[in-house]
Every structure is written in structure tokens, then in C-alpha cells.
Length: 285
Image (cartoon, rainbow, N blue to C red; front, side):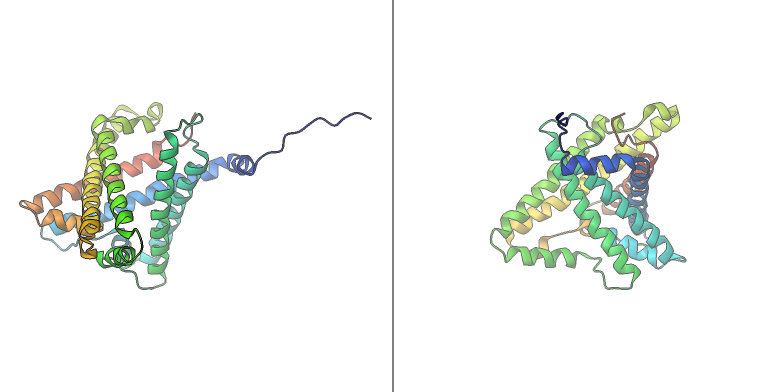
């Protein structure tokens, strides 16, 4: 009786990876749709902040606030459904990056830190997607700093709460610093498929990417500083979200000018996300 050839069983991760590979075109399109949705959110925040900086009708708001503003526009619910679907796509892509790292076939130990970051981002955009659905169904969504302060207050009452908040602040500062380095060095352009871009697209993607990432980096550092202050003082009122960080900029000398520059940076970051949706290299090929 002849022996059956030994067939190595595939692990669960390999099976899931195989399924993702088989439906790769759909997954990648969904991911690009997600980058578009992210760009829309940042453009809305930037436009509202720019109107506030110039004294026109506008306000400083967070991602949730931007979606709430969108929902109040004509055809707002339809637009919000599309935006929620895009945010879900972006979240799914971050989870895939964290689990399978399709952009790097031979990951080093350093890539594991990136994977943790992808999961962190997935958590943030899962929350945003849920917020979009809650706004759609007219549920109450806190779009101010009070929601973050309530969360800080709960964390401070827990064992090691101050330490966790302080570490979260440090993470925001590190992410902001890395983002600023990538913006200044131009390393972010390596993510684009240059062969599919003309000279104008390549040049302008560099401009809006540098400006947009720098503005976002500044806000991340400000949020991180306030989180560390929250941990140090044990005062949840020190916690600031995106709108609080923008308000802090506006309260400084030449505040409207600083706010206007950051607002334009956020709009640029939105355009940069549109470039990602079209030209980003989503897999190693």
C-alpha cells in the first residue's frame, strides 16, 4: 500500500491571507475608498477652521463634529452613509496591514511597531465609523472636548490611570514627531507609484503632503502635551481633542494666523489623502 504524500496543513493566518489574496482587487478598491473618506473628513475640518480663523461663519471642530456638519447639509444622510462606508474601508485596510503587512513581504522586527500602530489607527477609525452611524440615526454624539475629558476622568480613577494617560500623550508626541520628520524629509513620497504619475502630479503631491503632514504633526504634538499635563496634574480638564488643540493655537499671539495656516494644512492633508487613494502603493509589487 503506497503512502500518501505528506501535505502540510495551512495555518489559520495562511488561510485568511489566501482568501484576502483571492479577493485582492475588491479589498484594494475598498482601501482606496477609505483614503478618500479620510481626506473628506480632514478637508471639512480644515474648511471650518479656516472660516473661523478669517472671522466668517465657521467653528473649530473634531472629526465627529465635521461629520455632524456634513449630516446637516442637503443630501447629508446619503453623504454620511457613503462616508461611513469609506471609513469602514479604511479601518479594514488598517487591520489587514496589522495582520498581514502586505506592503512589506519581508518584515523586520521594526515592522512590528508599525503593526501596533495600524491597530491603534483601526481603533480610532472604528470609533469614527460608529459615530457616523450614530449621527445618521440621530443619536447624541459629543463633538467637543467634554467627551475626551470624561474619558480622562474615568481613566484617572483607575489604577495606573495617570501612567496610561501619560504614555498615550507620549505616543501622540512620537507619532507627531515621526510624521514631521517624514514630511520634511519627503520619505512619504516612497509610498506613491511614481511610474503612474506625471511630473505635475508628482511635484504637487510632494507639496500638499509636506504641508498637510506638518500641520497634522503639530496638532498631534499639542494633543500629546495636553495628555501629559492631564497625567501630571490629575486634572481631566487639561485633556484636549482635535478641536481643543486648534483652539489652543487660536488663543496664542497671532492666533488667527496660526490657525489659518494649520487649517490650510488640514485641507492640504485632505488633498494628499485623495492622492493616496489614487496612487498609493498598497502592496509590494
